[in-house]
Amino acid sequence: MLHFFRKQRTFRPARAVAQAMLLGVILSLASCGSRSDAAEAENPNGFSDEQATQYYMLRANGQFDAYVAAMQSCDSTTEAYRSQMARLLKHHEAQILQTKGGTTGAEVLRKFFHKNGTVAVVFLNVTFKDGSSEEVIQTMVFDGENWRLK
Image (tube, rainbow, N blue to C red; front, top):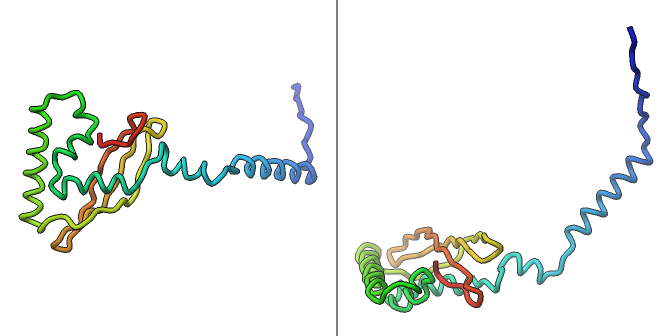
C-alpha cells in the first residue's frame, strides 16, 4: 500500500504576529474617513431630521395642500386626485383631533437609507395632546435637489 505523506507545517510565531499586524493596519486604514464622510453616510444628500418632522407637522397643523404638494408621488396626478388626497388627510387629522386632542409634536427616532441614499424610511415618534404617542413610518425620496415625501 502506498501512502502519501504531507510535510508537517510548523507554527512560526513571528509570521503569525506579522500577519496579525498587517491585518490590523488594513482594518485601521479601511475605517479611516473624515467626519464629513461620516455625516454624509448618516445623512446622505443633505437629509435633515428637522425637514422630516416639518413635513409631518404640515398635516398636523392643517396644511393639507402643502403636505400633498410635498408628496413626490402626487406630482404627475390630476388636481382632482390631489384634492381627494388632501380631503383624506383632513379626515384622518379630524379623527386624531377627536380621539387624542390633536398632535403636539414629532421627532425622528431612527432612519434607514436605501437606493444609494435616495430613499429614506423615517420612524417618527408622534406625540398627542392626551399624552399618548405613536410611532409613524414616513418614506421620503431625494428628487435630485430636495428630500420630499414619497
